[in-house]
Image (cartoon, rainbow, N blue to C red; front, side):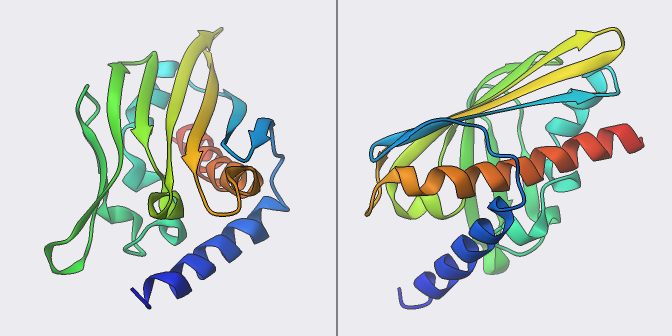
Length: 177
């Protein structure tokens, strides 16, 4: 148990450092939860965006994984599927469970990302894709509720920063290919 807290401090410190650089879009934040929304215009058809979205090992930052390596991430994009991570010595992490998968349109997941797993909080992550003239408008929302010592309102900006980093990387990957 003593080894968990230094890791949590490192992760939270990294999140806070990045959040200062991110354009935060916090819709609501209070002690019981927060709501985030980000939108992206991606220069690619939504089928290409969806294909990349369901392969987080290709775009999620290794620095925001428990194993330290994004190649350990996987996603089974179907209801009941897992956004999971392999750990050393046969261990694993379930980041989120897929609750709705409409290929090329929308992906909804429920669970707790990163250090939120060490609280009584969980959230709903929704990624919606709409094609517009060969481009894709991607809307990402994350609604979190529950209990965290000190209140969840303190988590809103850092979590928004981390999600901003991840989904900006997804956009960059799709537009490079």
